[in-house]
Length: 144
Image (cartoon, rainbow, N blue to C red; front, side, top):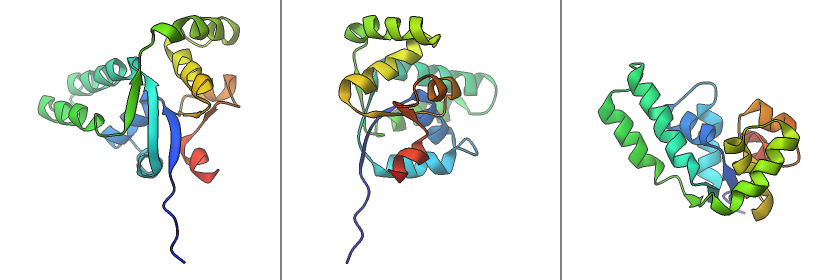
């Protein structure tokens, strides 16, 4: 009997996309497995600007040449992440931030996860601790 390819619906934190695109160890392999299984990814649209900032910092620090940063930014469009406008999410994210101490721009990802009924794939330790029922490491999501 052929083994079914895993498929996953999840909210994708910017750090998961960034680690994948930059090949950051020790996160690259779990991210590769995660994106291979991801069939329906979403994130607040702020992830695109956050990723641009990560690539800018990588260029500025000499980790990536400008041409490679632009190439990886183009590649990010093929990761299968649908961007959700943050406007309607801000009130819920603000309330979650007030109660958790997590910044609003991070709580936007939690808000998308809760509203969509999906788990949040992240390596962010603060999010994992503050929202253990919502946030999980990408490799942990693949096990369930």
